[in-house]
Image (tube, rainbow, N blue to C red; front, top):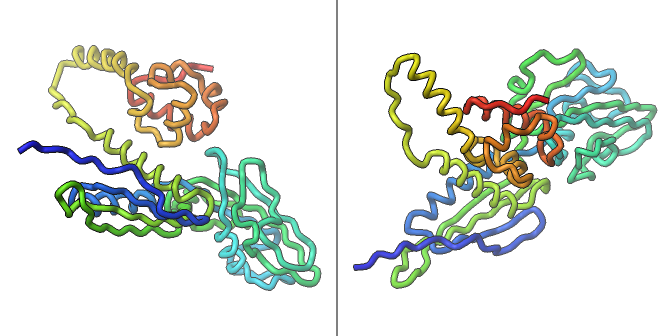
Length: 315
């Protein structure tokens, strides 16, 4: 009997309405629907980057348990409102946004003064209500990250007096569900159809979230193809020669195999940098001129090259 391998279809759009999308993948081999669905769900929830407020400094407020004259909300309630603002941060560097209001009335996210690298996707989000002669002076730090990070991890160093550190929920995903149903492929009726629902906070399209999760999974699986060769004990002279040889061979390594984040890898490949050798011929300043490459990305690239015995070109 001849055996044919059936490959799944590309994702198909069932519906897309605002921040919610439903997609289907057909012709999955029996059992693969749950395997793929659960894996994609976990990646979407844990591995998509986002931006959030990590620190807040309010004029005249020493800590989060204080109250302010002329402000209806407590400081704690105001901080919870700030955490509900959805940010898009262009680049890796943290940014500071500010708010300076003296008028009576409702304060919303649109009242913030933003640098060009920051966008707010829900400007109608309520921040506070002012009355009388209230004066609200506020600064907040926006950072990029993954998943949920408690403030103890974010603030490894002591923060300044009057600065309030916050837990940060970086993920741009609100909800991910999937379901699997059987379908007919040829004479068989036990193949799987995967239907996945994604709801975001508006900072990323649900289709982009699914595509990014698939790319992340492929990148991770590519990294574990093959086996490591056993390491035999050798003399110091042979080890030194082997180290030099491995450095030469390392120049043939592709950028996609350096273990860099998906975003950094994409930015380098888009700029025409395909190999570790080409990357090593660039200076740090030259890399920072590329779209999507900042100081953190340069550090990530330098660490990856160091593992191969390579370094960036000196400025």
